[in-house]
Image (cartoon, rainbow, N blue to C red; front, side, top):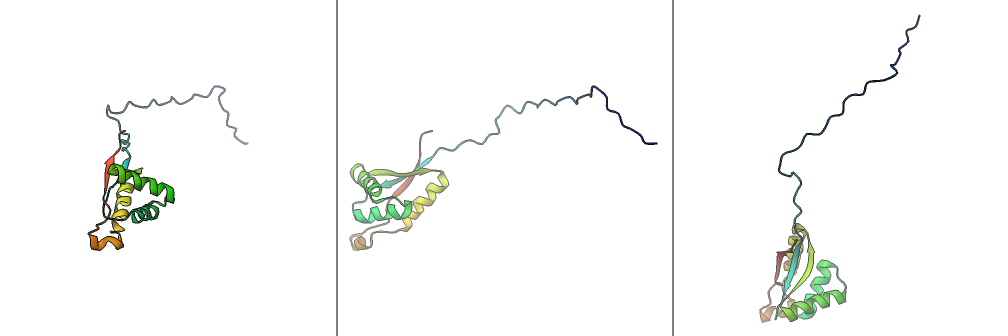
Amino acid sequence: MSETVTKPDNPVAAPKKKPRPGPSTSTKPKIQPPYAVILHNDPINGFAYVIGVLKRVFRYGGMRAFVLTLRAHLTGKSVVWMGSFEVAELKAGQIRAEGPDPKKIKAGAKPLGVSLEPMPA
């Protein structure tokens, strides 16, 4: 003789659990503002050298690198890149690591001046 299992016509559903309200403080991470890599004007390093540095570090085309270099020359500084703080630090370090213009070392050239600034949120 075999036993048969019968299912009730109206199965009882388990009660759904309601999520508990969390603490009053948010646990979402804050979005950090983007940071700008600022290139400062340099009266000693050559214009072509600065353009070359921007092309190597950021992989910019010649025209974009020229415009950014010209902006730094005319206004004293130029935003050459924006992004996360960590990458901005890396890019600024790469610019400094390029060193001074080899043709201008006797004239007192130093590595290009760069700084980081948070952009408004």
